[in-house]
Picture 1 (cartoon, helix red, strand yellow):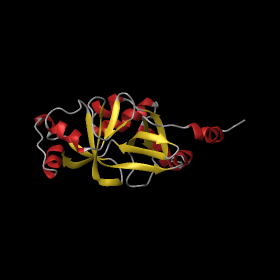
Picture 2 (cartoon, one colour):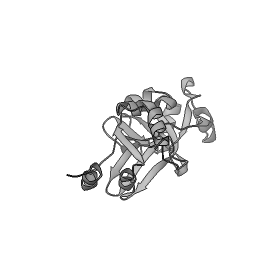
Picture 3 (tube, one colour):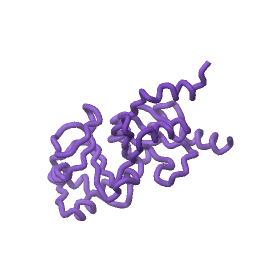
Picture 4 (cartoon, helix red, strand yellow):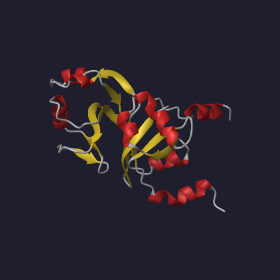
Length: 197
């Protein structure tokens, strides 16, 4: 009889975690990813890329728009916090958003969510014509070919299909517990069990 690990490894070549959440296990010590919730935007045989969605930084959208010399007209967006999206290209902005609009450089995750890196989306946001739901990050998380699969085999992450509700409707601090709840697990109890191994 196969153990879970054996059957998992046998199926790894078919694994596609696009539009899934990666939940960092309590043993994760990498400071970039400890206690993180990462949304996988693309996963294929070349590797994977995602955005950490529960790490706001002390930079508001109004401050970011001032830095790039763009107006931000919608007052309700001024105090929205930019997020740390991951350790790769931290000087570059990434906008995770609901579908709609036509931007110069968008990765269509699925028919409901896109990830845009072109400046035209920020211009639209500044004019109040941007996507209804958005999360602006600096940087992203990237994995080379087979790297994410190996980390999963090493039990670095739990994964669960993602929901737009968690991404866009919940405050940052509630996203990780909500993703854990999708698995029927409470992060606090998981941490305690890991600590008493």
